[in-house]
Image 1 (tube, helix red, strand yellow):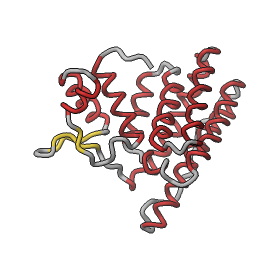
Image 2: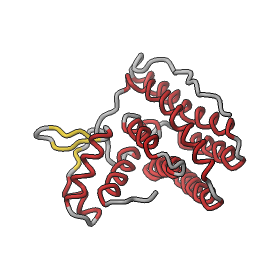
Image 3: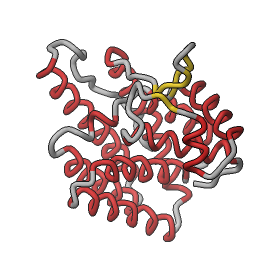
Image 4: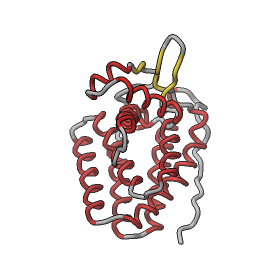
Length: 229
């Protein structure tokens, strides 16, 4: 992914950190610490906070400063359906743009994901999952759709899903099915793979949370995706 400004670079760094769990939900984000870590001035960090607040990744609270926004479990079903719709759209558009170099880039990210999973590096697994999807969707060259997907990601509990026992391994297998369909140019199979990948994470999260607090989430949705021509 190409960044045009320093604040976009910082925003992407923080998005990945939030979705990977490196910056936990409810954590206080300090401008000075992030600026020092990235060897930048305070200004692009401040502007990145504004971008992320508009997207829903962070909240600005009086006396507390900027904190990572919590996810809303009650809204996850609707978010799940929207993710299926928009991410399927991005995959189909990306397939029209992909070159052998792009396929190789996705394969490399998938290898790194599986190596991190095999090594038990949970933080790396979560970060690489984010990079895999971000790389693929950016190829679609549909910045508005990608923006809406990033807003949905801000509200989705990836950090919790990827802590479920065995989930990273199952996600790796789902990625492989998606990559196989994309490489073959099979649009129907690609949309099916996207839907199954998203819904599998939803079901596992629902099961995980129901064991802790029954009725935390509604029943798993049956997402409907527009037919692929």
